Amino acid sequence: MIRKSLLLKYARSLAEVAVESGFEPQIQQNFEHMTAVNRQVPEFLKVFKNPVIPLDVKRKLMTAVADTFGYHAYFRDFLKLLTDHHRTAYLPDIYELYLREQNTLTGILSVQVFAPRPLDEAHQRRLASELAEILGVRIQFDVEMDDTLIGGLKIRMDGTVYDGSVKRQLERFRESLSAEAIG
Image (cartoon, rainbow, N blue to C red; front, side, top):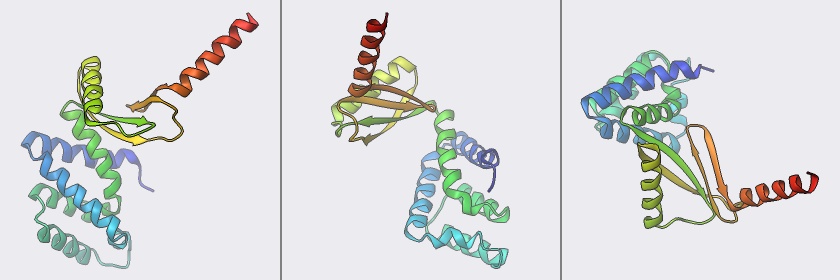
């Protein structure tokens, strides 16, 4: 298995070039397309792990895909680089790191919100606005349903989970009652 720090170098390099040149939407769209291809045809990236398949065949395959789908020149060159260095199979991991790097460079904080039920657009806008005001950055978040929650929200950002769920509030209340009973 390859080290994450090495993959991060690839992701960071492409993110820096994409942001500096203003092509991050196109690069992200190309990454998303490659991710979709990999989901629909899981064998696609496995070809690049196979040592029996010659490198020139892998290059031609990647070039054909990039040309067929009209990938941005920077992304096309990036795919060639990954192919030449035998890193193409790690494209999904690099994409995840790329998104994080792109967000950092553009001042966006990626937040994951866990809710007991779907949040309507107004609630999502208000939550994003309040978080942006508190943190001083733009917020991009995904909402996931968590059926273990009774109410409230859990928010994950930068590897930390902030638990404002009713379940956690009840646990804290129980702990405080227990502490009072003992003390």
